[in-house]
Length: 381
Image (cartoon, rainbow, N blue to C red):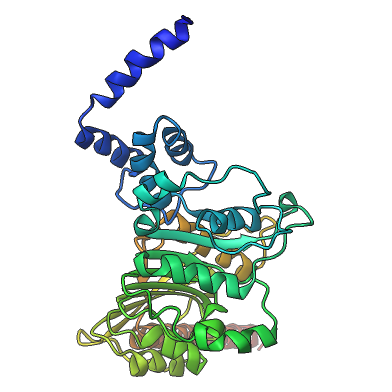
């Protein structure tokens, strides 16, 4: 018998003699982080994803447990290819000419093991941004809106955390109108969803928010449209809202946050580079009874060939969102306008004092010049 074959069976028996609780503890440590903030999804290149995929190939028994962890923590669908492969795994429709469609006679998933693992029930976190990259090939079609809808219909009810970017999704006007009855309630089925990160255009397709959302981050520059206000501020359970900073923010924008929020207390966090943060003139004075608190977060800028501020902030926004660090990031309270006004008034008083001192110095100089002239006149006389 081959030496490797002789070694395989004892090792396998020793592996399966481990208590299931110990094996689960190992997997918990594998997907965990030192600060307890889990990412929305680990990327395919991450060591955690690679380890879990390797464990699914060890044996049938190991597949059932490991695949649950894999689909719970590593659904990172950032290309059209990975998105299509996931649809294929869930037995969702792919056209026969799609590069990721299984050809006749090609081996598919193990139906018995997949059903036993009950994968869809364990999909609780998902990052969806199906970009068409060069690596996807010319034959790979872009993701379409109807496909996003049926995917959300399958995995949505179990999701607790979702990061969804619809900017790479192709949708014609006629397609949007045709799918409108289905898009109206797509988020309403996500009753378990607590955390949502989405691109600004999501509300154009899905105008009604998840009912029990606690944390929301949207790449919108403020909330000036009625649709955005309804989506972001009409959720009574919402506790934290991250936005890109308003362009030319006004006191009326702050009042709109206070007037439209329906819950008990909301932290609104505005993301921008440090130089762009300011308190709008005439903004209300903060009180302890305010149901809305406004905060500021600085996106770092090197000033050495960076993108424009909006592009930079958008990239920083998505990076920390997918990493799972956005909602716990360090922030500062927007300064109250009354304090800003006091500081400005103090500066004005200092300027006036400086002007008075300058005037007194000028008077002294004039007196000295007059005395000198008198002395000169006396000498000449």
